Length: 491
Image 1 (tube, helix red, strand yellow):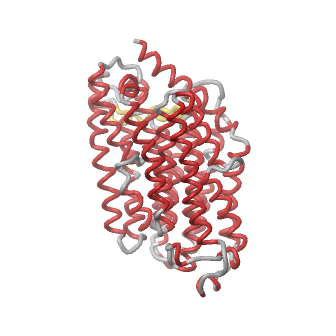
Image 2: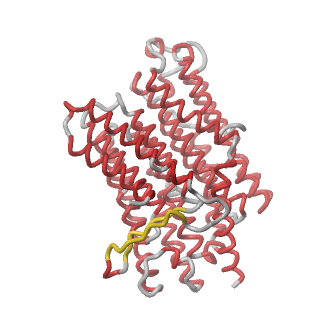
Image 3: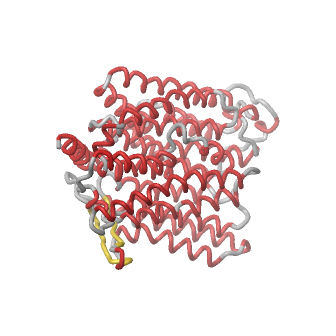
């Protein structure tokens, strides 16, 4: 078994073991097995980075074997500079989420932990798949564990939120399947994604394919105006579910644009780039304003995620190297920062059982260590230089200015709105005198919570101070993608 297969199947196998245990009287053993499984699953991804060859856009760690011979479907996986970091990010966030859920979940613990382990493996499969059907199977299979996580361990309206999440994402994906079948026939019976990148497709066909891909991936990002499922899901999902959804699952849609829309339909991507840019700018500005009026912390951070992911799609569709690289960096940074923001809300919710901003005030007086972490993550969410949140946004703004000054100016307003809603929340929750007896009774974070938040704090600061390892990996693949799009335009 190759390194990529180990990265995909190790967490899934551990998940199957946890399901086999299945009894709450073994909850302590289940938690430790889940943690060991998550750590091992992360460790097996590290050789991918260590053995990754810089300076090439070629797929690496490629594995290919026959799967469904009749239709020429293969188990074909590999990573390049675009996908490598998302494999590592997924495995890393899974470790953090298992630690975060240690005490919060007390019923059906084995099923809960197994859902996250299996989900982690499936998402790594999405980022690694080089066969169209394999990609689709992994892409759709991620819905199942997340649906269960929301629907079983969520809040009062969990069933409504789970159905809304499932239906929105599933309906968009049906058009993706139709597009994959068309490409299979057009390529003479191949589901190889890299072969599809080389297909000579007419303008009309590219346009239809572009919007089929858009239907699947825009909902997943989610882009405005198909973002309305996200706040509902975040509010009802358990803390771990919100963290994984924001940190990883939203990236599956953005990754789809890079792997399918831009290389397979390059002319249509350029022709309809104005639509993508317009929707991205609306997300950045309008949704940022919506976040300003939220009274629920989870809803505020959920809308914040939509605004920050608007930077990602904006960076992709301005078609210059710093913009596309900035979009990918923003995806990784958002994984760290948004995951941390939701976990901080979870720390408070575990103690007070309220997400309302009005339920807090003066938390810094009773939880000084925790408030220090929350301040760091709030600053990163604002895009403070020296944190991960700054790097990607700054690169996208530079790329946007390079393309059009006014576009860059519009994008830059997001930094103002981001600072406004984040600091508005931080001021009311953490600063000032102790607001009520619930806040007075709070106890500071324990060693488990300190470990969890420290892991994310180190990642946020490291990426903010020294982003070079991240950009060095992705630059050749980004340059190759842009050459491919430009060459198609010339033809």
